[in-house]
Length: 133
Image (cartoon, rainbow, N blue to C red; front, side):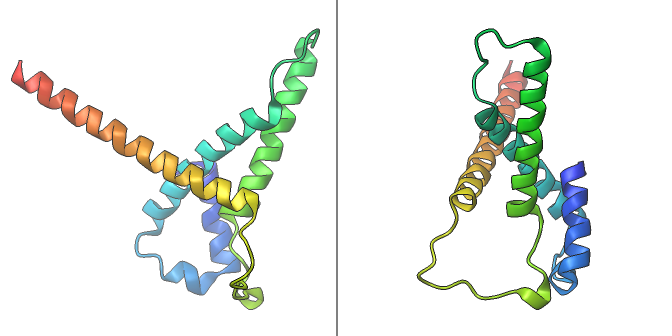
């Protein structure tokens, strides 16, 4: 389990213990969530950092990329890894639209799921191809 998965697991244990107890296999669930979070951080970091600036020095670039990663991690932790505290949970209004970041994260989860499935299919095809030769 990566650091994002560990963070989420600790957050759920602390903020939503009764919901945490409902998770059948917490190790697998938070491992998968951590991997999805890592992929989301990577994608978001690239978007936040943007392209290299003309004349940008090495240290300026390191600072820009580090800042982008920190921002991406903060967003993903807030939107994806931290549950609502149980005593503050409210039902969302039916008319309320999800946040842009929430929609983006749901999209990224689906993209990552499809990517994993495609890789698994390719690996199975390669194994079948290797066995036939």
